[in-house]
Image 1 (cartoon, rainbow, N blue to C red):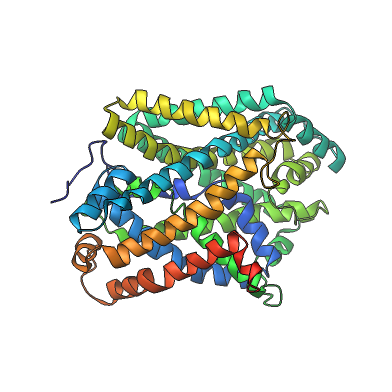
Image 2: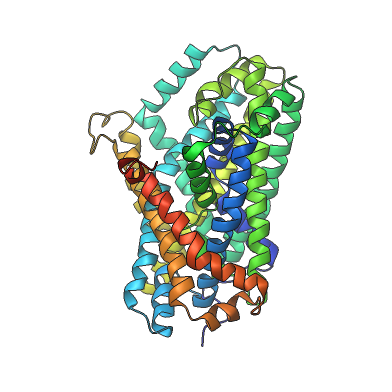
Length: 458
């Protein structure tokens, strides 16, 4: 018999859960990686493949992760131990929970550093630092900023304090209250940015870059990139969605919620592209700079356009909200485990987890300057953390979630939890979670670590 509620609290409504899970999924990568990647790999052709991959990979695995979380009602580690025991499986499945929490820990440590950059740029934009700047000046400005460990430490520290403050207040007063404010604010800011982009005179050009289908640019690499984006953009495999699912009431439809979350996440990414690319083209700037676009290209656009100071401030504030909602979801699984297994109060658990992440983040920010000569496998500490967590642990976690939900969990258990009956909807999910999703994410994993190229398939 599984618990009907979590000891940590519950979402007051399904909408609160949807806002929180969408906040977890919508992060800095949505704002710049999806639009840039879509344009790079054929615009509408990439978007079409991405949507197919979201339906066939992202939605089934997210349904599985929420289902496991709601059935276990505990932190990912304890949930996997409990469910494995109930199903007569090896307790070693709890390692899946451990891997998710460790991956989230590593990601948050460097994510907080990057989020600190966005906070610093809010004040730079507001203070008019980008007025009339050229590419060389902006690049020098960014280079000097990341070369200053004290400045990076200050912003990293502020962001971690903000994240800890939310998580320490609990599910209802902390997580839910924050996303009820931050997610609507994020959408309003994004819509305002799209409206601003419409005045640039290059909105059609930006939309064309994002949506015009060019299948000649897609290729195998583009398809693999779309598969990876569909998995990573939904915040899967790191315990965040599983622990959020543990706070969802038993009456709420998992399938409907996941479709809304996936659709909203995709909408945010597309709106970000419609906000960014018209400004880039209006100022004759290159769109092929990935994450560098945010700190090295857009400041030039904001510095040269009417109203750029105000809208530049709004844009970087948008990034802060996107980073903040993701950060609290990464911290929550660690805090839940500490409360359950160590008997800590939520405040103490949040502070302990936050300090641990903050300390590891210091190593990441130092790898950008004072420790820049220290590398392992040719990667600095920050890049190494990102590679191990994002390219290895997350997709491996996704594969294992699919295997457990599709092969280890009794069919009657998943029917009971998903509440779809044994009809067409459930059978389609059953097919996707057992065969399509694990194979597809395994291919993403092999591609990410370079094995596909090694055997000539990438």
